[in-house]
Image (cartoon, rainbow, N blue to C red; front, top):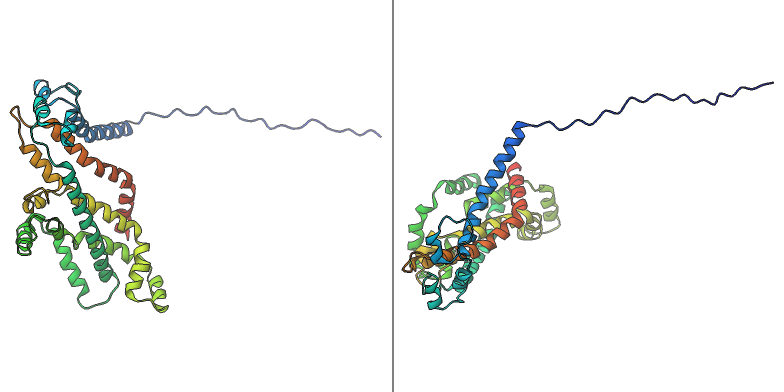
Length: 313
C-alpha cells in the first residue's frame, strides 16, 4: 500500500508593507512653536542684558550702549558690589566711590524673609484648619470677611501698618519690617483651606477616636499629609518677601534694617560724575535675583501641581 504524504505547506501571501507616512507640515503647530520660542527669548533677554551690562566697563557703556556684547569686558561691577574695589579703582571705572554694604543687606533679607515665611505659614495653616475642620458659629461669614482682604490693594494698608509699627517702637528694626506680613494673609488661608477640605474626614475621625486631641491631629496628621502645599506656600511667601521693596523702604532708615532691594536703591542713588553705575547696579541685581531664580527653577513643577490640585479640590 502506497501512502502519499503532502509535504507542501500552504503559505498565505502577505500584503506588501506600506511605507510609513511622512509627518505632514502643520501650520498651526509651527506658529505655536514660533510664538513660544519668541516668548522664551523675550523672557530671557532682560537677564542676558543684565549680565552683559554687569560684565562691561561702566565708562565704556556710555560710549557704545547698543553693543550686544560686554563693552570692554570687566568684572569691576561685581568687585564693587562685594567691596573688593577701592574708591579710586571704582571711580576709574566710572563707578561710585562708595560701596554698598552688600553682605549686611543680604543678611537682613534672609532674616526678614525667614521670619515672614515661618510665621505666615504656621499661623495661616492653623487658621485654614479652623476654617476647614472646626465647627463654630459664623465660621463661613468670618471666612468671607477674610476673603474680602484679597480685594484690598496692599498700598491702602501701608499707612495704618506704619502707624502701628511706629507706636510699637519697631521702626528701623528687622522685626518691624517683617511683622505686617508675618502673621497671616488671606491668600495663604484660602490656599491651605482648599487643600484641607480635600483630606478624608475618616482619617481624622479615626485619630480622634484613638484619643488624639485636635492639636495632635493637626500637627501629627494634617501637617504631614499637607507637606506639598505647605512647602509650595513657603516658597511663594519667601520669594514675595525677598522681592518686597516699598514697605521696607518706609520703615528702614539705616543699614541695620535695610534689606537687599532697598540697598540696591541706595546703590543707584550713589551717582558718579559720568552717570549711574549701571555695571555695578546690574551686578548687584543679578546677585540678588540669582537665589530666587534657582529656588523657583527647582520648585516650579511642585508649585504648579500644588496650585492646580488645591483648585480642583
